[in-house]
Length: 361
Ligand code: F6P
Image 1: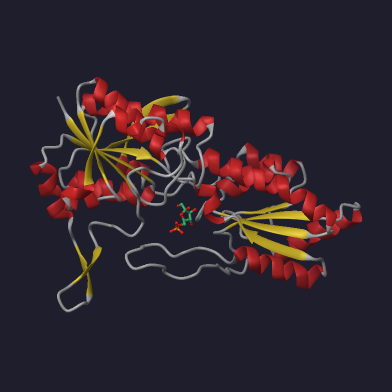
Image 2: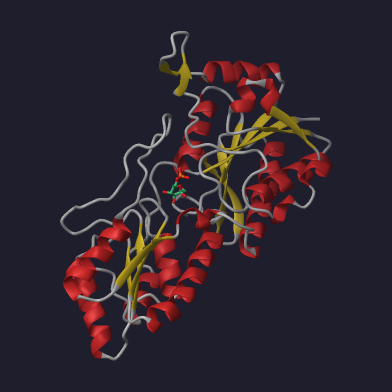
């Protein structure tokens, strides 16, 4: 008989509920008690935020977006904003309290579902003695040591669908449409959706772009009687002169800057330099919403059950990973060392170049 707790941290991703579903079902079949900590680590700090999860509580959730536990990307328990008695905000390390509550609640293991930020926190808890197992989540697909993170396939499919819809309106109005997609400092979403969605140019953080090259591609389209163009820009894309685009730090407790603005900049430069009607749009959080695709559902269910098997085996401090179609355990520390970038030698990049897509270089 074991008692395990699940948490979901960082930006949500389609498939989170499928992991929860799998852990609850597989854990319950072992005769274990499964709990969920609401909103990241809140349940470890406040017992009212810790909920018991039974198969009945998770009925049908594998097909739904979001997370029934809630999530946050401003709740690092090692540096949490707390208001003191005189109303000032202080950053407080709550990790010892979390460890002692974890022991007091007699948990055997914590299954932390998260991206690089949340898994880094989980790893710090593992170093403090908490038995932790990580599950790789993020639409950005930027975690090392796993071929895929869940959420990515759904985000790509949403972005591709948006690009498909933009073609007809761009064509009807002789326009250039610039679409900014998510992905932080990795260009996976932009590359996969751009290639699949018929983009003329795809700008990714891994290839600093020259705006003149993008304009050349648009002019070339005109010469070939293609009166419209679609440009996909990853939110973390940078110019060859080192221009980066962000909206500052964001909310208190959030550790990363809020990216954004590159799509609008690219659109205005194209408008100035080509005189073409140009519009930009930011796909934004639509990419994180909705029901997970079949691929993401299956991957999330596989990750969840593999995590339960790892609890049974005691493979703590490890993350479940997809490696060549198999579930494997890799040290969390290894998975968070770097962010996984697009390999410029990969065949998706060659495919883009071979069909004439401009990559801004
Ligand atoms: O990491 C996932 C992600 O969706 C990124 O692609 C994006 O930059 C960020 O989260 C947005 O975060 P927020 O939900 O705080 O706006």
